[in-house]
Length: 292
Image 1: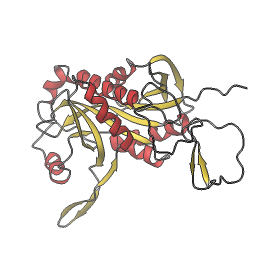
Image 2 (image 1 turned 60 degrees about the vertical axis):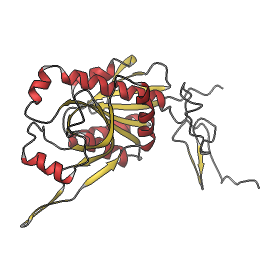
Image 3 (image 1 turned 90 degrees about the vertical axis):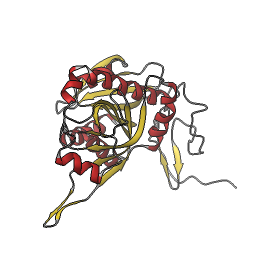
Image 4 (image 1 turned 135 degrees about the horizontal axis):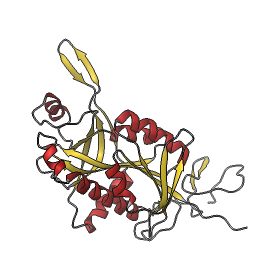
């Protein structure tokens, strides 16, 4: 009996329709699917790779992103999770059309209000090392992309005033953040809590988070930023193949760390066998012993 092909899924999340459309343009053989609670996705192939893409438009906000990301992870069991879209720049040298890949993501609202003022209690989560590394190499072959690898701030606020109190608060407490957006921390936290999945935030810069935001939007900066972020995400997936699959980028880009059992993604780890990278058919009993 032949063993069916293992399909690896990358879950790509967006908040806005234009972000969704930018990613969708890269996905072929799309089919609509509906979760029993009503959440809709499109599922299709990323040409030239072993990846199946599950694409969702979640709407705006970190809490919504966290809840729906958890729902989709439990339903689709993806191998990697991306949140892709637009963001505002927090740095003078991060320009409209640039792409920020989140080395970590901050949740900016946590803290304690005291008589002496607001005491920040920072919360942060790292992006996936493997996906970040894939991104660093992928952008080397993308001359039309100006990338930045830096922290990203998440807050339930549209920042359109660089002189506001919230802007000063971010500069004081999260001064290495290169961009601000609204969903990244929620999605990253969901990926972390649901099996510690590889996850990455990829944001194209559409404005400078100042009073000129509406002018930049009117000039078409958001579609440009969304297209750039989508292009980088696709390039990352082309560079970073599924754990148990075969793809064009394996070989010089494969792990080579001795953990791959060579049987479709299963790995031996102490007293257990990890099949997260592939499919298992049959039963396992006993314990593997090493021959010496």
